[in-house]
Amino acid sequence: MAKINDSFSKLAAGYLFPEIARRTNAFLSENPDANIMKLGIGNTTEALPPTLVKAMKNKLDLLSNRETYSGYGDEQGDTPLREALVNYYRNYGVELDASEFFVSDGAKADAANIQQLFSKDNIVAFQDPAYPVYVDSNVIGGRTPGYSKELQGYENFVYLPCREENGFIPEIPNQKVDLIYLCSPNNPTGAVMTHKQLKEFVDYANENKAVIIFDSAYCEYIKDDSLPRSIYEVEGAKSCAIEINSLSKTAGFTGVRLGWTIVPKALVCQDSEEGVINSMWNRRQCTFFNGASNVAQAGGLGALSKQGLIESRALVDYYLDNAEIIKEGLESLGLVCYGGGNSPYIWAKTPNNMTSWEFFDFLLKECHVVITPGSGFGPAGEGFVRISSYGHKENVIKAMNSIKENFKNVK
Ligand code: PLP
Image 1 (cartoon, rainbow, N blue to C red):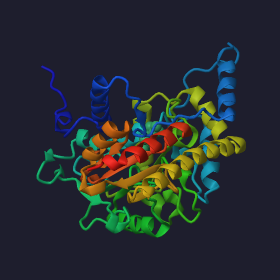
Image 2 (image 1 turned 90 degrees about the vertical axis):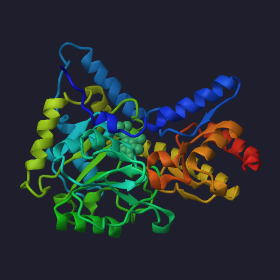
Image 3 (image 1 turned 90 degrees about the horizontal axis):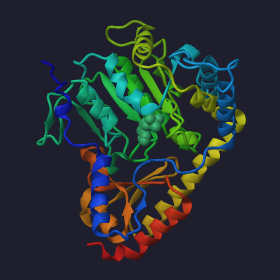
Image 4 (image 1 turned 135 degrees about the vertical axis):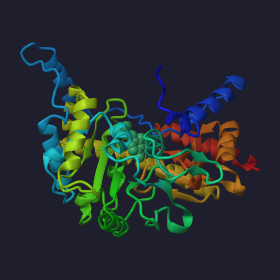
């Protein structure tokens, strides 16, 4: 008799976005003429940069010819792309080897799968609020006995609250933890860690032989050059950190799908020498993954070219402009807002002590705008909402006008 993996039944709630869709659809079924404006999910909306499109079309031409056709590639990714990634990091002053890069079909799967390399006994720390994948994948990975209503979180998990008081930057764990998930610029708060703040985590991890899983999916949104775009800009990070990134938010590849994970050879933990974790991830990918799409990889190579980077950064600037429009609009209503600037997300405090879902319902029903309730990202997200800058500028302006016109109805 087959038995299911009962860790799935420990997941506390459905994924956040299905619940948003359920409420939106329920409202629409009662108000079919309502024009709903979406500033919820972080899904890109603008056309792909021309250099990337050209690179992918060229690849398709090669594939359409018997002489130049190619099938499976290396599971780790094409060598020219891995070398282009080495160069990309070099421009940020980070020296890595191509064998430390593992190209994938995006950051989400890597962020979910990376926990497979580590023992079930590890104590895991998460920024709170955080991108839900880190917590959920560790629930499925069997690292918690279950969700505790009393704790408002999973037992055995260590939550590092990111609140107004600490500028939404997590504090070093006050107990020994083994794995630490960090994301900067952060989804959902938009907070960006400084060198000094990251260095404290790197020092903690090296001292405790802990491993940091650093998600830098929004690194290209950092406009302030004093802020680190990669954890490897911080001295000592190669021996304690894995970095995950993708072209989704940098180059509009949310649908094309291309990402990478860096597992430095120097990375060690309590029971592994240098090179072991790198080999394990290699083995994991070779067993579970058959390489990223060759068309997407050609696009990725285009994105990392000089012209590709210029065009991709213009795309990032477009969303950052939207973020500014949102932030200014909300602040003009007296709302306290964080994020934006070096991030595509605005993290707004709910008015009148409303809960995140109450403010979500208000914006949906009164303004016809969908945002994301902060509590969906973890207990410390309560009392906040995340507004995404991903949208056509004209729609962002319309949504903001609707919020401005109807905000007076807020209770
Ligand atoms: N990491 C963070 C912090 C994200 O917000 C997202 C997507 O929203 C991802 C990873 C997923 O990226 P990808 O599209 O590369 O899977």
